[in-house]
Length: 243
Image (cartoon, rainbow, N blue to C red; front, side, top):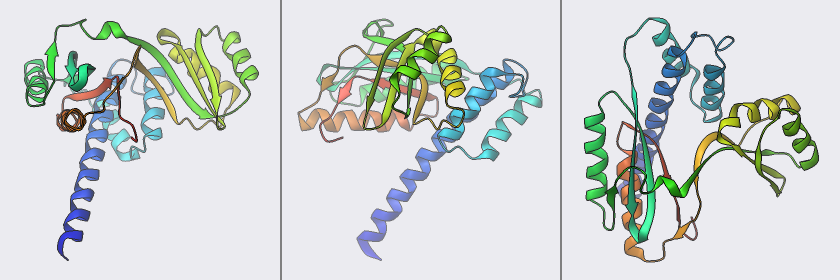
C-alpha cells in the first residue's frame, strides 16, 4: 500500500474530523435555538432558519433530530457565547467565537493556539472587532437585480450591497435585517438554494500574506483553532493568493 495509502488515509481522517466538528457545531446551535422557544420549527422561526442552514451545510437529518429531541427532553445543558480577538501573522486580525459550557477552558485553549503560532497574539476585547462589520450575507443563483431590490424594498430590508457575477447574486444586508432579508428572498424565489446564507462579520480591510513563514503560521493557527471543540466560528481578514 505504501505512501499513497498513508496520504489517502490521512486525508480521509482530516475530512472526517472536519465533518465531526461541523456536526458538533450545528448540534449546539440547534439545541440552543430549540431551547430558546418551542422545539418545533413550525412555531420557532429561529429554529426553522437554523435547520435550513444545517441542511445547506449537509448536516445529516439524524444530527438535526437528536439536537431537537435533546431540547424536547428537558436537558439542562447550557452553553455560553464567548468572543476572543487577536492578531495573526503579517499584522492580520482574527476573531474567534466560541460556544462553550466552560469559558475558562475555551479561553485557555484559544490562547494556547495563538501562543504557539509565529506572529500571533491575543488582544483585548475591541482591539480587532472595530475593523469588522456585522452583516447579513446571501449568495445564490439569480440575475434579476431590479426584482430583488424591489422585493427587499417591499420587505423594508436595508440592503448595503447587491451585485451579480457569473450568474451568482450576492446580497449584503444590515445585520439586524438578516431574517427579513432571508424571508424576502424566499418569498420571491420559493425554491431557492442558497450558496451562502448567514449573519456574519466582514473585515473593512484585507491583508494579503506573501511571506511563506506567515502563510504557514496562519494555516497552523487555523488548524489548531479548528481542532478546539469550543470554537464555533473564526473570522479573519487574511487573503492568500491562489487559495
